[in-house]
Image (tube, rainbow over all chains, first blue to last red; front, side, top):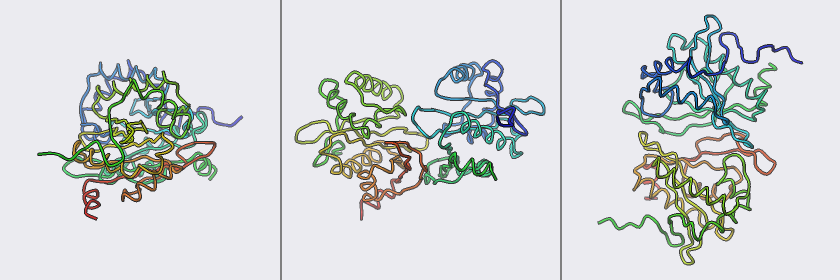
Length: 187
Length: 189
């Protein structure tokens, strides 16, 4: 047997199940920051009640085609973000990962990269995914650097896909194959 | 006056789903696993008539509920026989973007109709939905669609390396794209 004792723990964070009762208020608060919402997805930036978010989280907790984790700081136990694999399909070699760090004081300090490394280890060591993909907006340079550090490679961009702040931005796609992840780990 | 016909070209017409006439023929096409992919999510298998009916019902409900999906049955113009579908989906209105899918099940039509259907799809996307750009996700083994996309001057923008497992092999998946400006320039060419 290998030496990893806690597969879901890295150096700065651990991944734990999302708990709708514990997390819904915090998730709702994160959305008050429009910068967070505009990094998160392409929907119009908007806020949701903690009740609404709680119901959505509960549905995700119980869904069978996705995994969804809270990102917890090891140092103080704070829930700082979320990460998950969406729409896992039998027979498909590919899965998309989504991640967000909701609390801005943890931005740019390696917490997201650490969470992503744990998630990749989980996807390749337990789900035996052939590859993991993600999409990221052209203006999210901090995230792009983080994904590169975690081992993702650029696979192309949808030119001018997004319309925000009065101009259009590219939607980039990145991916990592299980074989690349293993090689990187060995080095 | 607006008189440009949106739903036909010389060979093909776009119509609504027909629960009476199409189910058996459409289900029959899914014996070809390449076509079955277009009606399956991950789990690919040939479908029965009842399964196809359930797919049609779900599709109509989704189209009605979300208004982000536009599905057309494709028919050969002279015989009115079903040959496959054209679909605009994942339309994101605040960014004016959407994706297109073309599935041809009729073996006689494969390799002959794709270019004309791409034209009809883009005419609808740009002149009726008022989208700014359209994407097309396509597998490496779909040679007829790839040829049509290249001939119609779409741009290959993304390669998901080994993003699909089909017939015992890994294949790349590509995303092609075109904006309204590129489409208009192509019309002038």
